[in-house]
Length: 234
Image (cartoon, rainbow, N blue to C red; front, side):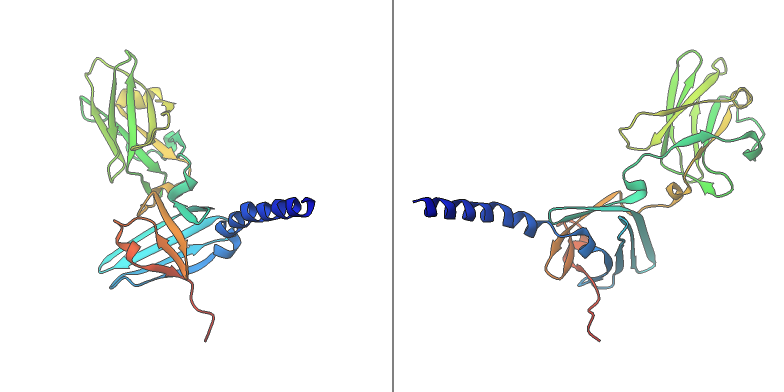
């Protein structure tokens, strides 16, 4: 009886421990260079780096797309998080010496310019304009980095809140310098220029399968293919 009980304990330990190790592929074994196979007229590459960063590109016809950021693995699912690994961008007010536009904004308009000095504009930033009276208005920066709202001449701009369009994060509030408020035009710099790059996606999930990785979304055209590492055989 005692021998049978010991056997049962040993078997139970095996049953409950074996699947965990089998279902958790080591991140180090997943790192590497993958190429998309099985999707006609589409070229795509995925590089999973050992430091947790990834680079992805896709080309079809005259269209080229790219994304970069961080990757993580849980069970048999690899998730690519574009941008700064799910972090939110941080902003600061442009120094006056960085401002190239000195003339006031058109009467009745307040203009917030978003970008990185001497590099380029940043689109897709939700800007909340707040007047001294407490009145607010919101606009999203477009391709040239401008976010524009209408405000009565009686209002005075005191601060601006910024966050990515669609983000649920709190606004990052910045004071508007007096000179900029008077001219109704101010500029805000993102502290990391990586945010200027257009990402093809915010998040992409791939499932570990025999031979490589498959996009875990039946409605995504890439799900028809397989991201596979090149064969080591010559």
